[in-house]
Length: 161
Image (cartoon, rainbow, N blue to C red; front, side, top):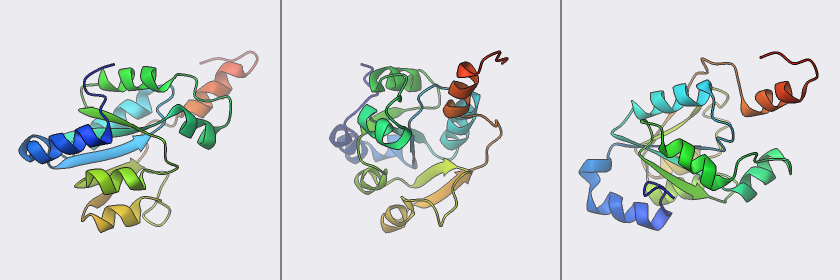
């Protein structure tokens, strides 16, 4: 696996040893099962908000709990490899918890980013971000797509892309 796929503990050590390299730190999270243009736009915009971007990647078991037994389509190692190949992504941390609140508490991001399908009131990690003195940024969708929509299009008879 890529050296930018880190455990929480390893990333905490890097943050403590080299804060000037990592901060301001931007954190986001998600499943990123089939990477699409919406993801790339979102991650690029998130990265532009700080010095580094860390992506919390839902583990395979976490994705199954969130999306159902037929997901993920790609394993966590493959999803992490695709994410670390993106210029915008500085590190990936795989996590298994239902939300990224524990990851927020551990990494103490300066900025926590989620997509425009959330509001400050519906964001499960909002309280954890406030507790570490960070701020929440919501990025509006430009590309109206999702992995679920792509899978549905693939499964539809007579589909066109």
